[in-house]
Every structure is written in structure tokens, then in C-alpha cells.
Amino acid sequence: MLVLGLETSCDETGVALYDSERGLLADALFSQIDLHRVYGGVVPELASRDHVKRMLPLIRQVLDEADRTMQDVGGIAYTAGPGLVGALLVGASCARAMAFALDIPAIGVHHMEGHLLAPMLEEQPPEFPFIALLVSGGHTQLVRVDGIGRYRLLGESIDDAAGEAFDKTAKMLGLRYPGGPEIARLAGQGVAGRFRLPRPMTDRPGLEFSFSGLKTSVLNHWNKTVAAGAADEQARADLAHAFQEAVVDTLVIKCRRALEQEGLQRLVIAGGVSANTALRQSLEHMLTELGGEVFYARPRFCTDNGAMIAYAGCRRLLAGQQQDLAIQARARWPMTELEAV
Ligand code: KG4
Ligand code: ZN
Image (cartoon, rainbow, N blue to C red):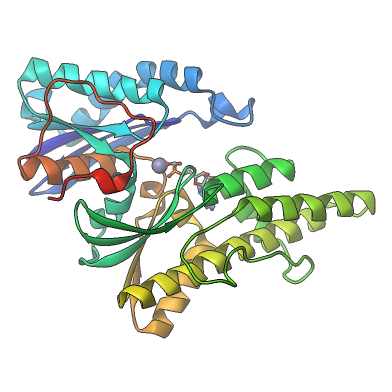
């Protein structure tokens, strides 16, 4: 089955064609970063309008690249949530209209399930069961995964998501949006040991996260450094390094705890923050110690993309799941509500 996947939950228009027999045939992405950068974050109305402009040209592009036509498409998958409702509606209505016209099934995909399954597009996909660490701009969750749609939430952030903490901290340090990659770049030039930051909620049992205090701690250090007249490029890099190290340490500690609690040795990391090299390295190290393995997608499939939606939709469509003609778009949608495949 050839599935067209559409992703429009936030500030990236992602389109891909996935074939159940041959794998990923083509994928294309338009990132709106330049559009939102002047505002320091995503402006929902601008995001929706831009998705409208990009969607059809991107669909034509992937069809051309894969040497296919719309008549070859057997199903359409679109991101139905969670995300910005106006942005979601662009992909959802486009998918629904095309599916209706072509008389083929369409399915609304959960954005975080898309992220979670993205490592399945790689050469050595993980086998079930595994622990998934989902770290994106809106979510930080530890999930036990026993199969597609068989998710048990083990813990999540009680305030900011990891990606959000990266973005807000970057803003405080005067870095560009989106902050994750900027902090990662700057941290590479930083020296360890100058600033000491907390590892939130690691000194007590449980798998919950909290990143908002860490952000405040960075702000206090930065204000003191500014007041002391020492706020130069090196100080900024050192603080970025300390921040990244604190987030990574915290995530590693909680992942280890989740693996031990569930008696598992396979860890999947997914979502934008899983592109972070320091996080990948520390998790690799921890899993080697445990005799286990860590899985992640190639960097461009860690952040939002159409391929993960096409893949997740394909798996569900093949299992006979599809929805009626209603256009689905949900700002909030717990992943644990999903039907098992
Ligand atoms: O999954 P994603 O593309 O969108 C959401 O579903 O939210 O994640 C975006 C988040 C942003 O907060 C961004 O700053 C962060 O992922 N991010 C990173 C890196 N690349 C993207 N954070 C840390 N290090 C990175 N290399
Ligand atoms: Zn995402």
C-alpha cells in the first residue's frame, strides 16, 4: 500500500510517500523557521497560512520524486493532533478532501506516535517491547511500548518539556529561535565545571520530570554574571554547556530508572531533542553499561517530518483502521487513548 503522509502540527510542512513493500519513496519538508524567527517563537496564524501555501507544491514534489501519481496512492495519513489547531486543520482538510475525491481511506495520526515510530524507518529498527523517551518541544514522556498503540505512560514533565526548556533558556541567553540546536552548538564551545546546575527530581524516586526550575537557575547565574561584568561569549558558552549537561544527566538518570523498573534493555529516543548529540552519546554510554541498545531516527526524522506520519498511518491503515469523513484536529490528545494495532 502506498501512503501519502502530511504533517502540519506546528511550524513545518512535511510530506512523504511510504510504500509498505518498498519503504520510504520520497519525503519533502518546508521549515517556517525564518518566518517565525523575528517573533522569537511560532505565531500560530502565520503557521496555518504558510501550510496552505506549501502543501500542494510539496505533494507534487514527492510524487515527482517517487515517479508516482495521485492515482497510485492507496491511503492518506495526516497529523490529527496534538498541535496548533489551525495548522492541523490545513493538513487534515487537505487529506480528507483528497481521500474523498479518490475514494481511498484516510487516517488521523497522533503526532507523538509518529515521532515514537520514526526509528522504525531506519535500517535496524527496534523490536518490541521497549522504553521510549519522547522529547520534543511540547512533550517529555517516558513510555513503555509493547506494540503499536500499546503504550503505558510511566512518567512525564510536570511543567516545561525538554525542548521548551532548551528554547526558553536560549532566549534568555540571547540566542536565536529555535533554541535547541543553538544551545547545542554553543555548548560545544563551553567548558564544564564553571556553573553548577541542579538535576531536577533525580534525588527522589519516580519517573516525573521538571525543567522549569532549571531554566530559572540558568537565569540567576546569567544575571549574576552580567552584574559582575563577566557576561562574554565564553561565559555564555559555559552556561549553555552546563544547561545541556544538566538536562542530559536528568534524562539519562530517568531512562535508566525506567529500564530497570520495567526490566527492559531497549531504549528508543524520539522527538526534536533526540537529535541532540550529547544526549545520544550519554544514552549510548549508559545502555552499553546495561548491556542494552539505544535506537533513534536520523536527525531530520527526529524533528517534525512527513515520513513518520506516512509510516504510522500506513501501519494503522494496513491493520484495517480508518475513520469516517470527519476532519479531526485535536490540540490535546493523550497517546494512551490510541487503539492497539
Ligand atoms: O519534535 P519537534 O520537531 O517538534 C515538536 O513536536 O515539538 O521538536 C522541536 C524541539 C524544539 O524545542 C527544539 O529546540 C528541539 O526540539 N531541538 C533540539 C535539537 N534540535 C531540535 N534540542 C536540543 N538539541 C538539538 N540538537
Ligand atoms: Zn514534533
